[in-house]
Amino acid sequence: MSKSAKGGLGRGFGALLGESLLAEEETAGGISTLPMTLIEPNQDQPRKDFDPEAMRELTRSIELHGVITPITVRKTRGDYYQIIAGERRWRAARSAGLTEIPAMVIEADDKTVMELALIENLQRKDLNPIEEAQGFDSLIRDYGLTQEAVAERVGRSRPAVANALRLLALPDNARAMVAAGTLSAGHARAVLAIKDETKRTDENLHKMAGMSVRQAEKFAKTLSAPEMPEPAPEACAVDYSAELAKKLEAALGRRVRIEQGKNAGAVSLEYYGPDDLERLCAALEKLSV
Image (cartoon, rainbow, N blue to C red; front, side):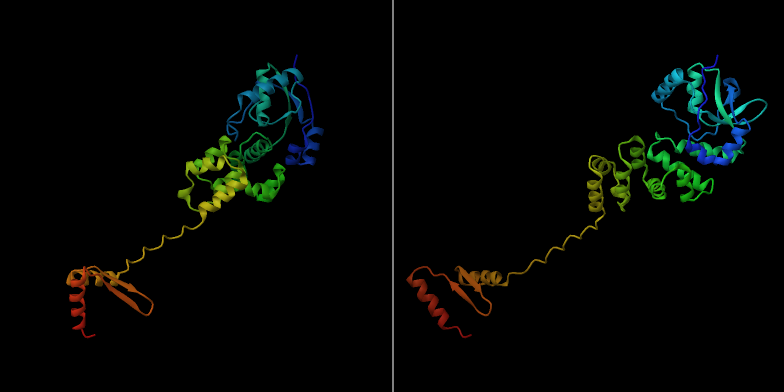
C-alpha cells in the first residue's frame, strides 16, 4: 500500500504556472498518484547537489507523513514521466520505500521545463548567495527575463535581485568564501567597493570576514583611498657659514665661529694667551675691508 498523501501545491509554484493553468490542470485530473518506477529525474536539472543531512530529514518526514506537496512532472516517452520540480521529494520518497507519489502532470517544452526547475530551486532557502546569483543570471541570459520579471517569479524585490547579481563580479577567491559562508553577501558587496583588484587579497578578505559589515565597508574605503606620494627629500642645504669658518680656521690656525643673523652677524676668533692676542690684533689692524 502506498504511503503517499495528496496535498496542496502552495502559492509559490502556483504563481509560476498561473492560477488559470492550475485550475485547468486540476479540473483535467492533472494531480495523479504515479508509480515511482515510471518517474525519472531531469538529467539537465540545474540543481546537482543535495545536502545529505537535509535529505535524511526529508526522508524521515515522508516516512511519517507521506509526500504532502505533489511533485510536478511532464509526460515523456511511453508511460514515463520526467520531473520538472520536486526531485528532492522524489528521492526522499524513494529512500522511504514509497511505491507511488502524488504528482501534477503538465505539458511543457524543454525550455519551460528548465525555467520552471530553475525557479523552483531559487524559491528554496538553502542556496548559497553565489548559487542564487547564478540562477538569477541564467534566467536573464538564457531565458530573456528582466530583473523585474525574475523578482516577480521568485518572490523577491528587484533591488534584492540586483544586489545578488552584483556578487558575480567578485574575484574567484571572494566567490569561494561567499559560497562557503565565510563571507556574507554584505561583506562581499564591501569587497566590490575595493577598486584596486591587487588589494582583494586572501589576507584582506579574511580580515573583512572578522569584521562587522559596517567595519568592512570602512576598511574597503581605506584600501580604495588613493595613496599619497611620498614627499621628495629636501635638497641638502649648504651651510656657507660653516664652510667659511673652516677656511678661516685653516688660515689663522685658531678656532673661528660665525654667527649669522637676519641682517647682520658676528665672527668670533679664539686667542691663546696675551702674546697671541697681541699678534692677532696686529694682524687685524693691517686689514682693510
